[in-house]
Amino acid sequence: MKTYELMLIIRPDLDVTEKKAVELINKLLVKAGGVVSAVSVWGKRTLAFPIKKMNEGIYVLATIEGTLKTADLEKEARMGTDYLRFMLTVK
Image (cartoon, rainbow, N blue to C red):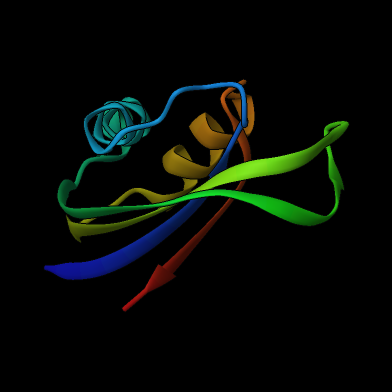
């Protein structure tokens, strides 16, 4: 079983608490598999450059355990409208 870290930048107009962040991440993990073990909401930060015409984003860091189908996770994240950017790394 592997451990992954998922960094998300979420649209700034959403009200993101830890509970809401877990819901957003679980939407990504429906097809990919894996279990969320920890979530940390870093809050709203100014972006270095505009992404999708937005200058701010809410940063969320999640630790995921299990065997992920990374292609499915990337596909869901790219199609989602709530996410500006994402980065998945193996810990």
